[in-house]
Image 1 (cartoon, rainbow, N blue to C red):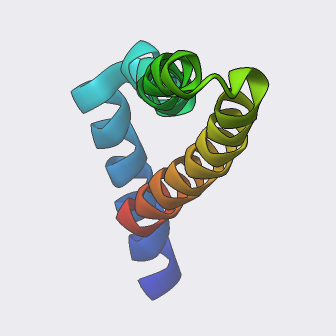
Image 2: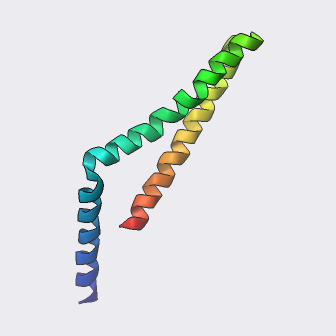
Length: 85
């Protein structure tokens, strides 16, 4: 009986997650987690590169840092969804 209760509880949590955010909401959340760090980090890097005349260096570093930040943010969000199930 306990395994049946666990299965029904897990399926109820999945359906509540789908109904509360919806698949499009979850997809949008992941898209923003991937797209925002490069936008936030690259624009200041472009400005600083122009100010200090170090044209590609800070832009490349900001892309690398933003890629790492996106990976960390997505991994944390996946773990959060796994814990909620």
